Figure (cartoon, rainbow, N blue to C red):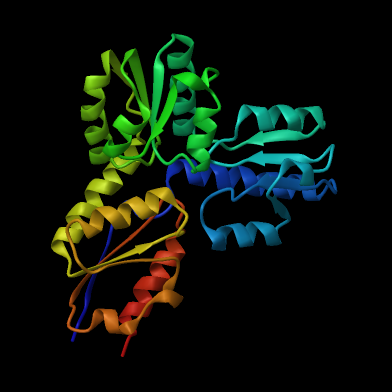
Length: 287
């Protein structure tokens, strides 16, 4: 039985991830020659395989600023970093290399300006995600702030206020953002909405929807801790009952494909093309 495999055109690294990795690799090459230590707090991008490769090239991934030595190099990951952390690093005479995605920087700027203009700031996203943490850090008055992940959160977290300013995690699902905004209408007379969802993210989400509708089974390749990859899997599940989110081909169960002839594959913004190709080749070679 022959299998048709369709790979989403926009799968694999996005612009922001490519940029972050290029800067990181150049930094590691440059400072390894100078015998300087290069650190990051947390993963540069949400892909364990890629981060392991960077570790082999010399990147020291730590969990806390206390682990970073003075006079070293620090790489700000693509998700951004709280200003308070960067200030402490400067006090330790650490050189900062910033790989924050430009779309994340834009969301940070919009949040900061809304707060400065006395809006109650609503950040639509996952409050534990490093990108959202970096956006929240821009807002000085935390009493005029709420991070909302679902429409049900609105009544729980927000009372009526004069004016609300909305920014969104760049990988947010657009339909979820719309549902939250519709609930916010009852909370303020004036609402300013800054659509900070990345354009490519939105296109990827539309693409996986169509792929899920037209395929018998969907494989989503990427980090389990990657917000944009998880969102792709969740969107696909709305249109297809056979959706599997895996980090690499080793997680594949051949039984998934019994009786299936049309398979769709997509990958998150932090998923290397070679990981997607490995999944495709593995499926084609299932006996």
